[in-house]
Length: 400
Ligand code: TRP
Ligand code: SF4
Image 1: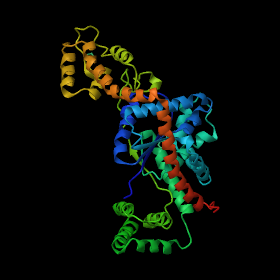
Image 2: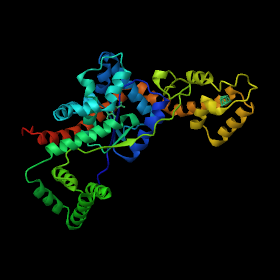
Image 3: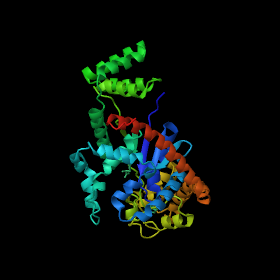
Image 4: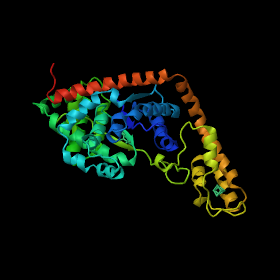
């Protein structure tokens, strides 16, 4: 049976923090058990904004991968690789650039937003404008069905869907498509063929999206289809061209509610982070010196957890009995702030303990990480090459 494929990437920012862990990595760890997953370092994407500081990318990439592994991303379940080591991404990016309308790229909201936000940089470059198209190539080259991303990335996934649709429309046409598609339907066998026809009619005549999904499931469930027939049957369900590239869905990762040390969202640019694998002493110190309810000046002043960033950490890390102890103790001045912070310190340290242990293995022997990535690149590359064969053929570049 066909299993939906998950793909996601992260720009190499170096050491990750608890916000990344609770917002993204925990999710990856859950997904890898359920789906075939590909996770990659988007090093070319880093160059779109940091083209003037290339020296830092490589170290940042390795550190980030160690953090993924530390967090529990498992190379025996998921494929981990580096974008630039699968050069097929660049080939697809180039070919897509031939037909991607300039207006679509200019209208992606992150384009102007980021240019304004990073106004100290000159981002009027071709590469930066092409950012979402490169991302589309990353996704489409693996025919990924689901892309776990944060809300800010949703326009990029939508853009990717539009590019895939346009590609299929332009290049999925073949002479005698309908006859070939009908022939492929017959190959499904009588029972499946009847169901396929029924679902197709329901979608095309009544716009029934449920029928479309059932049709996809039916095809995913069918073995022994050639790639060409598969593309025809997927395409024939909804139109009159082959479906060569798959339209992905975004898998919205719930916005990380991980508060930083000051109660704002945890972010490197606010300087309020706790890193993954940060040493125990530094974590303890950071939490001990965290701001508390500003009204609570003296130990004898009652406080209000709602006005205290420490409470937000309790909300993530503490069970009901501890939360209850905080609520009562704070409001009655029954506990002091240092006392109140201790269970949070303990919980953060406990969460990091297995991460530090896992990371140590890789720090002691960096060749392990190199090998994991080499394996991952090879596996990813095979998949990418399969898609590229189809893409080249569809675009008239099949010189066999
Ligand atoms: N643009 C993404 C980000 O900044 C990173 C990224 C690049 C990505 N290519 C991707 C994410 C493909 C998902 C799929 O977070
Ligand atoms: Fe914050 Fe806890 Fe101090 Fe109350 S007791 S102000 S919740 S740190």
